[in-house]
Length: 532
Image (cartoon, rainbow, N blue to C red; front, top):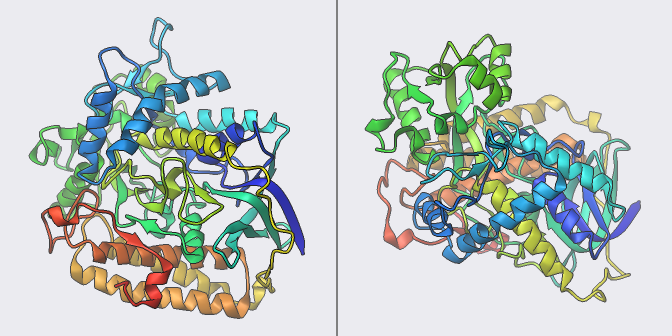
């Protein structure tokens, strides 16, 4: 069996993993392990931008206040203040790395836009392709760095944990050779992104199957606030479109939501209209669709010229045009879709989990900055701030704390993937995602959550049985993770008996001050039968 050793193991190659790797390479050798090609991540598909205070007319205090308001009582103020205050320095880091942010017409300052929930323009952007620009710049820097190595097409299976609950690396499936490798490290950093693929409709790419959350939970780490799943209000509705997000920045530039009768409706739900936070806009669209029976609503930016739209939103313009929609002349059919996990592996603002040797950064982590609803464009900001702080923390760790020479490794068994009929995995994969969409979506009920719990549990039990019987394969690993993370989302939603932010339950339509606290889940709770 192949065994690799490194100072720091990073699982994931989005902005969190790559930015951290660059910072950590100043004092350690870093190995980045990624399940597909290194550029494939949620980051690459991001359109909006990065929220950061750059104008004299703006202030840290206003950005903090906007974030706290969006988070509806669950944000940790100290964490938010750290994120906001360190944001400008991280933007300068990206400029130095060569990220080509959009400039004002004069060219002497960064162009800014405004998005939902923000009280001022503070979103720095690269037209509508911030993710592609960011990922490209980070990859160029990583490839030029002699202390960072990468292993592509290598799917992490589980963490290596010793008897003292110290994480020593991971087992991973090399998809090209179909062999399991063990990667041992002094520190393991989860940067695996989110879990949008647990839902039938999502803005996320196929890699977002919740692997980091699942591995951390199985290893015994504490998981927080998984009931808060953010649905992006505007994804393109088209029979041939797959996971195409229509940037919130369009609404920041004046796009209007209309029903199919052409009527505007957002002011009926919030005085901020289209610039209300995402949870409010997504529920408003959901409500309008259920009232009318329509399958989508319309996002109208036809008051802007085609020339302006091609310059400001080239990605959206070109992709919509490919589906026969000229957004300068026609409104865009849109529908909400699962987008971002506000919960995750519980960490402090240095990325430390409650397991020695394990860190988590980016969307897989729950720092407390997002609370019950993430403010638009705070995600990449948090990723950069946490990546820097996590690296700075590890730089202070004693170098003598290496990997023990006598690690007891038990390699997962790989068997012929053809031994199991793929229809079984395909069926459960689709069923789990449909159950989550129908029963654990934008609007929930006690009855639907109870049904979801039973059906997801059956899928998880089947996945674990097949894993034990047939061994490791890529599809098996991802199904196992999707089923587990789905079950944790359902359990968290059942625990929280109120409506707050992204978690709306018709049986408990109001927020309850008694629930102004985190929802925490650990594997050890199962044995005590404390989970719902």
